[in-house]
Length: 126
Image (cartoon, rainbow, N blue to C red; front, side, top):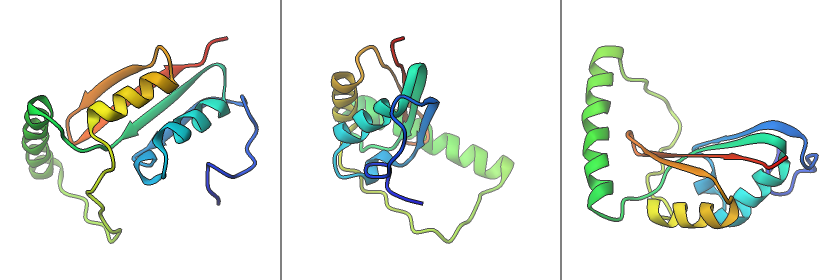
């Protein structure tokens, strides 16, 4: 186990690089996205599912959808209880994440998701 930012991983080697609810824990989002992109092979995909904080009316509306969705899913499929600590403070707003990702990953696709998440999909040029 190690830190993705400093582990000796092969550059441009992986067909798919995925980060699920992790990049907001790294100290520099731009550097983290650049590192993950550097690990992606030409023609490969980088997929990031991340968390951010709300910064405007659209975000708060999507948060409301997420609350309703969470309630429905919890009641129909059960709620998973775990012992891991939950950290709900995020360093960037959704708009800031999108702006940073656009600068680091030209041509990336951005999507704001319910349940307090966003998705970035980027394909490395061949």
